[in-house]
Amino acid sequence: MEKQELLTKTKETLSPLETQNIIQFFQAKTLQSILDSPLVLSAFVLVLFYTVIKRSKFMLLFLFTLLSLILLVRYTLPSPDNALDVHSTVPFVGGMLCIGAVLLYFIFIKTE
Image (cartoon, rainbow, N blue to C red; front, side, top):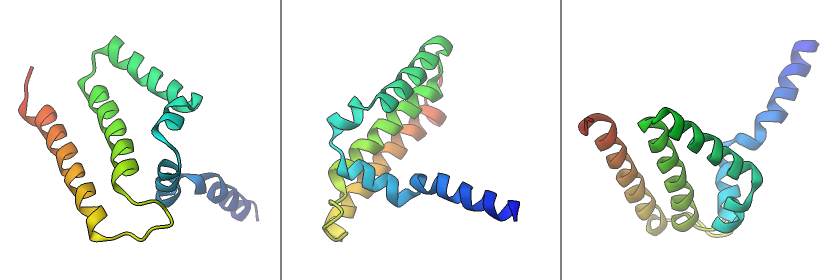
């Protein structure tokens, strides 16, 4: 019985991290309210501090990817009450390809 309770509690704890919930969070909030959140700000500051101290290219690319994805989801996907159609997914796919191209260039092509 303990194992089942543990699985249920874990499921309840991790349910806010489902993809649909994350997308709804970013669509419902404005960019200003996301960046004003103390949790988001502290995470960005910690990652930025680590990036500056370690001079890590990968962490800088992680910050770029995270901010780009937030902007991409916010401005290309429709609001939750509108249906998802081709006109809204084409810019999203194009933006994802651009982000992927930048990551591929900086990780594999450009050397220091």
